[in-house]
Image: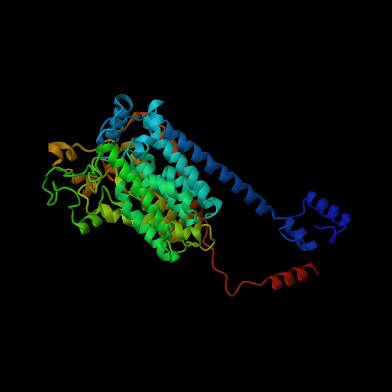
Length: 481
């Protein structure tokens, strides 16, 4: 209430009327005060509820990270064990092991190994990724949408399981996710180190990166963005040299699986039929992306501005990963829970689902959309939770007789890590009891507004056009008079 429009006496009289218990709506109508100057009680309560909900979201975020930190970690077998052994050889024998995996990740993890906390390297990488994505995406997403996105990465993605071991996919996915987000903001020099580290750590990803940079060059009508490929190839060449002293050796020569009843098993390299690989990667019950990343079903064309471009870049890179690994004999990622090589796809899946959940705040959101969002949220939380709780208990039938029936865990629902715990008793790590209350709390925080939206009565669309500001002002003057 400006003094140029109202006298001090009028202002004091209005305040006294409010203190006496008169409704704010009546005061606004009587004195011609805008709702921006004197908001309604409902709006004040709504703002208070919004601040409380924001606090609950951040609380769930912190509790989720603490829970992941307290998970017991043990690196013994598999690719993670191979990387750790190479790091031990480097520290104690002062030589580089000729393992087939890149040394980029182990070298970055060297301080963690010297401090005796190497198993927590991927968890720290994940936390750094959350921090950087939060800062980079802050101008692109509204605050509520950004918080939902970060919560989904903690409670409803493939990342939490990846933090339990020493595999290289976490570093690559986080680095490339941050790098592509910086590209969207046209900060190529800031993006380059992230893209170089992520790609050199998993050399097969140079093809998806080239595809992404080609699209960027096409959009900008310039080839300048392709310069990033140079440092990537230089680091990859240096990595090969320290391992093999030969730039032509990759370490994957004659790399193959065991021969089983599957028609194309036992063949080396990129020998799997491309079409079958794509179908298996996308739809198989035990490894399918569209099952392990339910947020991809919420892909929407309603995204606008920089966030639409970011989703476009992340989808292009994800498609490039599928193209590369579709022909790889081990497209399924070995004895690993879920689609190991496609961890990056959790980023667009979480972004799409966060946008979908945010869109439900619109008053005319349809009931079917709200129910679909609740189902996707439940599936997302269950998949992440089941991976942490049961991901290490692979059915024996998938390992017996030199993995003769390993494919049962890829294609048969009864052996899928997603569906099997729902119907068949599974051994679980009793040290993970804290997961249950933590994940329930996280789910309630995100699902609460969705359930409220689902239960509230449907809002009928108003008939005819909405009144203009002039018409509303005339109505107020009429009511006052």
